[in-house]
Length: 253
Image (cartoon, rainbow, N blue to C red):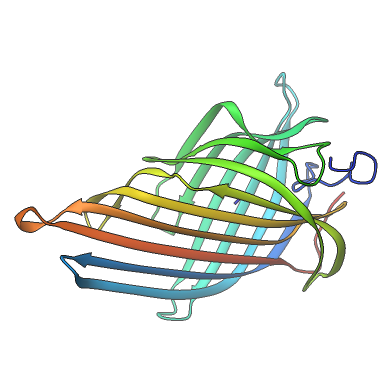
């Protein structure tokens, strides 16, 4: 979740073509890994892989607002290969798209079947995608927020590549990398509050002309710490990787 270049040739390239009814479905694979340690001793280890599908869709548009806002949803359903459990993650966003940029005004996230909605509003909005810039150029997206986390994000168009996914082969896809090296805040695990001491993430997206994102790889790692017994420190290391590849049958009007 969630990204012209040579002005004439790439004008139509957009990661999310915002027309109501547009819909993309992806094969999805996830890997999650974590480890908790206290005074050099491992307390717990976690490793899980899962697979399934991700559906991205433009649901509606509010044309009454001064800036038309599109309702965009990403729904990912995966099943663990370790314990067989199915999980559904849903992200709703409000987007604007004009000749200058694709911007995110709000996000609302529900993680898992028992998760609670978490709505974040951005003012100014996040600049997810700049239109009309050249390969090699970069921009600041803004600070992506969670309930208790902050992730400054930047983006760069690094080149063009041909990509083959289940939906076919797409030539001259723009390859865009979203980067963060300084996430901060806290997370709650097993009833304990861990303060993030380091965090890195990379999102790599291949965007096809007139289609949108055809492949994405998102990787993140983090270290967090919490007070332990006898003045010690409990350390939590975690990492995740998600790969989505476009399936046939996508709809882009």
